[in-house]
Length: 344
Ligand code: CP3
Image 1 (cartoon, helix red, strand yellow):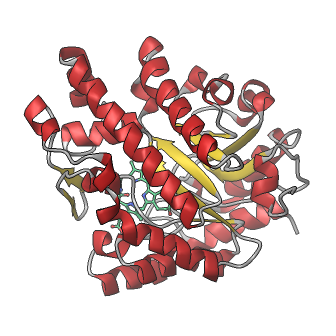
Image 2 (cartoon, protein in one colour):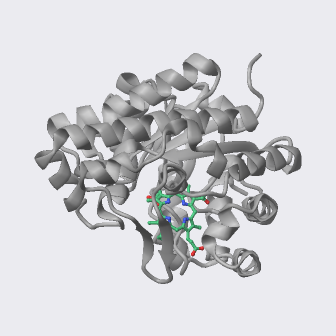
């Protein structure tokens, strides 16, 4: 049956008169209602593992703005935690994890069969959302791509250049590849369970794909994305997959074809005109307004949003930011962006 929800139609390759719209990190600290619910939960991880409250924050931006999609409220680092890594968040700094640099560290990880013991609350959030979302709103599940998740598991934190992960790759390739294989298998199991619980689309976030060059990009960004996509589609033939190889540059060219994803999410380092001729030729694209416009607003926001809509108007397009909205964004600018995209 042909899909009726706008996001699913765009993902199926349809060119729509107005692109459907959602925003990375749309449930987040720029919204006062999010900050209130997070305070009620106690901290970020308690919020992720509380299905009622995680569903509530997922719904907040849908109520406020009527986005065409809701993204499950969770985090890409919950999978490492389910695999046995310690995980905590330092306020104002970001995530911290126990590190994996030796075979002994790797051997302590749990098998993929055990992840659901930790991740069951996430599937429950998905089930709640499928009951509570408006019928026209699409529910997106997600996970981190293996390389990006590995960069955090190896370094134990976010890193500007992913240095520790590159070092492990060069010094102990067997261990690096074993870790990537474990994350890949865990990601397939995790996303499959999200789909069974009711996720209608899944997105794979490869936030640090840009630091993989040449053959490394083929082996550690493209190959895992292809393996995950193929495994998911073998189990759930109709599930659309969005890939986000952030800052891949020329690596965006052909990414949909080589990985089998239905849509390529674009960061704002590539121009919409370039991406229309080089990436959208293969199918749906998502993006790519700079998140800084959500802070600065004004006519530049409106002009840039309209230019992106125009550049992608010849093919399937889902409007989004180039990366997550930041805590200092003005909630009114989000409405201005939506008005600019949807028109008067
Ligand atoms: O987009 C959404 O609204 C859905 C939920 C979501 C979160 N994180 C919630 C979150 C999604 C899809 C993510 C993905 C994620 N998490 C990525 C990939 C996308 C990207 O941003 O590149 C990465 C790298 C992470 C890991 C992570 N989580 C970091 C580095 C941080 C700290 C940085 C920051 O923004 O504070 C987080 C925390 C986090 N994840 C927050 C939210 C709303 C902020 C936590 C808080 O409330 O304090």
